[in-house]
Length: 268
Image 1 (spheres, rainbow, N blue to C red):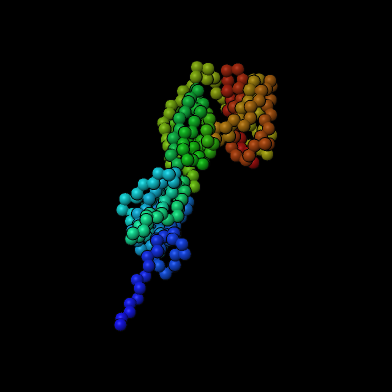
Image 2 (image 1 turned 30 degrees about the horizontal axis):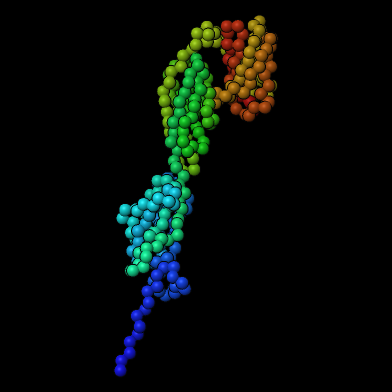
């Protein structure tokens, strides 16, 4: 009389009370990172299955597409955008089943670009960058700015190379252009003269004396080209208050008739 050991039953995934000592294609999937920068390598893993595996991706968890060649328990690839992933598992005669869905959030790199419009020596820049969070501009004459959309005033006609670096947490990108600025007819009739401002450096108050001329308008710019003071005047003795301004170098323009007087002052 002989006896035999019964064959071990095959229990399909999601059947009730599936035992852990029986091959089960429903083990979980995971990713080596859930938040990455664009084109960063990520490894997707499904554990415990001995069946056939096909990895899929989807932008919306509705439309799923196979990843060509991704048929192993682990798949490594560069992720170009935020996507959902899952492993479709086949095991013998059991119905195909899917692992849990893994979401990988991708931060895209900046794509730097900008346009500009000129008005005499003044240039307004419009930032058209995508995915940037901070910006650094150089205007080709030593001036800089960290504003998103700066307006910059050049001291003289000429050609300038403007460079803008856009940055986010994943990297940076650079855009640049060459531009030429010319005086408007009204600007070309202005005589530009130097003037002394004092005390220099200053704690806040700045004086200038242009007598016998009478000042009509006063403007002060920081080194980024941003106007920080604009005031009218009717005297040859001028007082400018830079107390609210941060420490740094400032450019003072004083207008009187057809004359424009310029001074530089350092705020401590």
